[in-house]
Length: 124
Image (cartoon, rainbow, N blue to C red; front, top):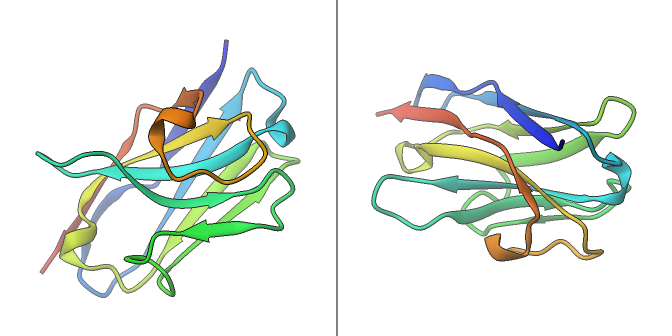
């Protein structure tokens, strides 16, 4: 049974930082591209960042480039999202996802497994 469990969300002031984690189990972690998505109330789920199987390739949404960093530790079956210079518009539920394809995809439909999400709220 595949499980993805996010942690690290919370309430932070604008300009602050948070680090999200996603621990995976029940799958061969190094065989999966991993991604972070977010969904704000009334909006569609959107791609935030993705990382290749070995960690050497990353991809970011334009809205977070230069502020967010995705990384992974294949020994710990965990990915991370370091979020700096947070803005109120970053407020959303953040989800990690696993994709068995080779390239880092930005569309949610290509991902096979999803976590339950962790809430990030940025106050102005």
